[in-house]
Image (cartoon, rainbow, N blue to C red; front, side, top):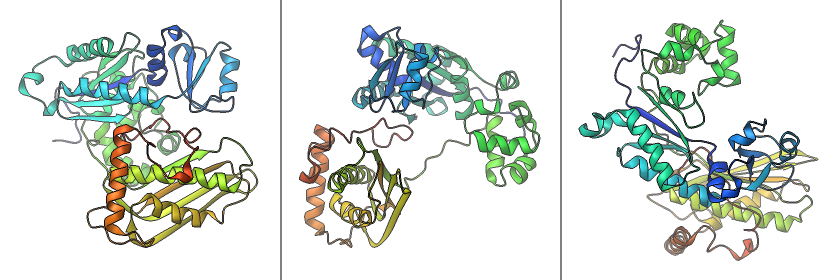
Length: 411
């Protein structure tokens, strides 16, 4: 492979992106919302940020991250719904099932995006026209999930160009990028249109006179590696832009965390600790679902008066149970400010949970393993929070599972 040349092989990577997924799922579930501006927020309050909006709402200027009250000024008839993760997980699994019919080598990049690697599928499947398969997947999504569901399909020689192709004509587009039209496509984009180029990377590129994707493409590898990114990342961008695969990697989980914005100001410390305990149970379940134990606990709080506060602790031995996580988190939290508006807890320094020892917090190993495994199995079968500590009773109506952006590990 010549990294200095373009990848001229047949594009065999397909990127599928559900259009305005959460808003569209709600329009599918509630026909009266179709054709109307819809926004999804994690809480239905005026000061909550919008996590996604339908295309009807976007056409009126409603954007991701906008506060609900701001969005209503642009779209007075906006319908704001509280997020409903079980619906979105259902559609996620339906999309994944559809994708698996074409290749065993699929990757879900997020709850609403997936990649099919046709380089590693059967010979018979490789002989098919991938654009034809893309339209077939669109039809299956329509038939098997619902008539309101649309997706963009992008096809390219690597994951980066396939994702770029999927973003070209939203909603419901299908595009192919290969070595023949690569420069033409880059000529229509800005640096910020490239996945992975945000404010800081754009500024780095601008410093050496790179202001467009075409200039980025034409930059030599030495400039990118030694001057712009000052690491191997520069070489990776040099290859990525030319259609070579550098993103087919998996990364081990490093931390597991949850955070929560308190539903009211001035909650008593006892109630805040209940909500912290709820977060610890969620973190513990997520961590164990990945076969991990932790050595460290980190807690933080945001206070309108004291600002950002945090503490952390490293234990000499690994721990895994909800009780162990909460015991340490609560001890750290005893130093937190009095007035709090947001809390969070994370476990870090994770390791494979293959040789558990008695933890610092006195886990009776065999008993705790059995009880914890039984609780996890019941919650896995009947839903998160079916079994939980009595101390967290009543917190479930406040501390709800949010939409899992990014990683799909816990789906």
